[in-house]
Length: 110
Length: 415
Image (cartoon, rainbow over all chains, first blue to last red; front, side):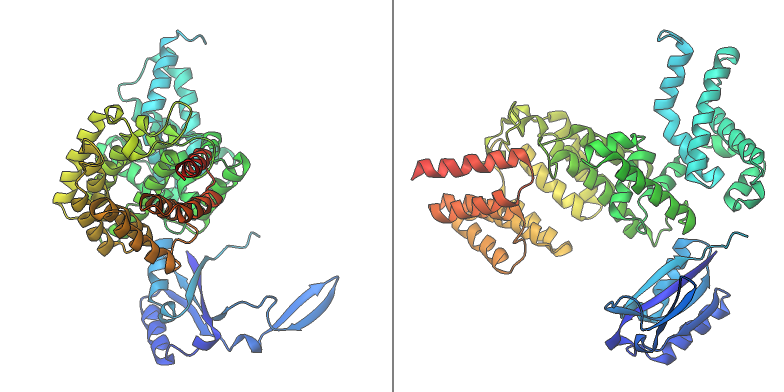
């Protein structure tokens, strides 16, 4: 079962955890076969939001809602169940600075 | 069928005694709450049809599990969506020897699995409570809604959402491992205590106690102690029994609150106190957990012949111990009241004022009520009135409102 672990951090804490530590975490998970993908993101100021409304594309600066914490990166993991996913999420280093949202991945229905 | 039909009565009795166990096992075998619930109903329907013809089976529970499982798999096949189901249902297809669900230990584990799953920390607190009462205790959605003064559709939605999360996020159906157990057990105990408190001191509404919920919480507490005799579970059961022992003395016939010091102690349930005290000793022997300490305090109250003859020094000491493991302002407030009883109202008042000055408990009605009472005892009538009025503005419970109004009008008389 796949889970997407979304890393949320306040702007001031985007660099609170050293890249080196995050790389080590990713390597460890990859070696155990539980990591499918993981990437850090640039700050939310660099984001662009795309929507299609009435067939026309609109592009706006930034995300729709301003929130205190922003999406800072993600880990796509393969875990047995939610308990395992929570255990893994707890090991993601920014968990101690911000929060990790664990979301089960849904299968598309053909 | 008529009411005198003995088979019908037997099926009803088996339902009351076994339906929760059968459900817990079916959830494990079928891997899904909704499928298991449907299977449970199908199994009992089959019992009503077949038992009059074939006689009541020697082991009704395993008959029901077996029938439920068969009906579920049959139903799934007929809907020809069997191949889309996840492993849980697929596992059910594998022939399992009947011993696998006859086994007492596995079946009791299923009940624990159900409790821990309903109280999983990934579920919202109100969903944990609703799900536990419905799935573990077998209460109907309407009954739970009524007890919590929540509209039934809201409550039903809460349960549906929680079950969807269990399924979609794959919350496992298992008893937590040893290293996870303390934290997970805390959640279970909190859910049980919340149910108890809602029954014992309803947070809103027109009556002081809703016995159905307190009784349900005590039954849950007993079940948990039977299945998993951890010291804190024993401590919580003791605490609930000791609090509940005073139920008959806590309110007048008209539903007015009676303070501990004014209660008729002959109305306290002595059997429940004896059991509570025995359980406190058992729990404390294994180490002083937060519930066991609170139960020990309740036991000192329960065994005292009057408020004056209560061992307040010991109670203050127990609150000190409690404060160390759980440094909450509410515990500090309770300790302050005990200090007032030990050292006089002025000493207690100073502590209560310090808590309120810090800004903690500013919106907690009982903090203002305690301050008012202590002010009254030291003769500060104006301050007492002010605090009673603050408490009155914060309460949402009708008997408490009446009680506080009476205290205020009594103040006027003493002037």
